[in-house]
Length: 135
Image 1 (cartoon, rainbow, N blue to C red):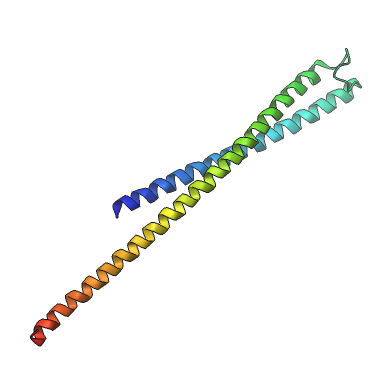
Image 2: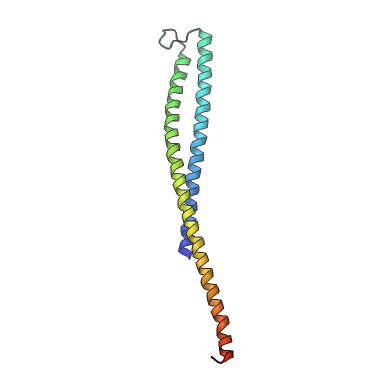
């Protein structure tokens, strides 16, 4: 059953690729979250230093304005990544189920092959006995 073997290897590869994608997205989300939190601290620090926390104020610090803009972009990217992560997790689950199905089919095929081999061995063992008895 080489074709079944190949199918199992293909499904295993696909599931592993989906798992890697989930890990990669999770890592990116963690990094973006860390960057967003760091920018938030910097914005707060800059606002406290200038004693102005209203972004529409004419004297609002330029660095705080730029950091706020970067943080908003990061949060938007973070939300997009979370959607991609949900999709990737669903694809990984589906690929894992397909792998399990292919593995169970392979195990069933191997069991059937073993049974055929056992029956053939028994028949081979019975043939000489039948000749000895004069059948």
